[in-house]
Image (tube, rainbow, N blue to C red; front, side):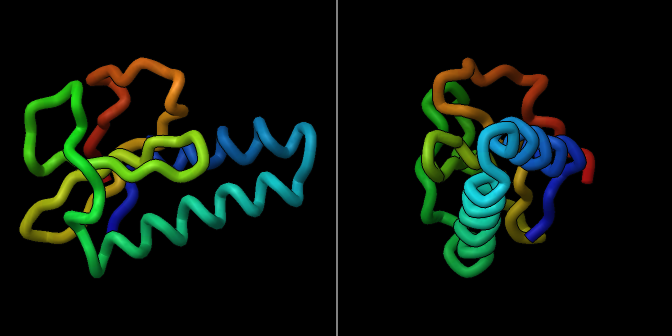
Length: 98
């Protein structure tokens, strides 16, 4: 399991946004996202294909109201982005540098 730099920043932004109201819930949400993502190491095809992108190796799981976007390849699972469900997914959100 690997996280891109941008996916780590996504987690930080989620934490910072929620922490404005509650540090407790910010920690809870971020920890749940990380826990669910860790589960993908054993079950990489658990998530569904991404509707907007025609690539069988790009998948997503939903945690709260966030889309955890990841790529499955021969090296395992790479977390690419965490995007709020209300946001439109763009190519720029899927940076793959690790």
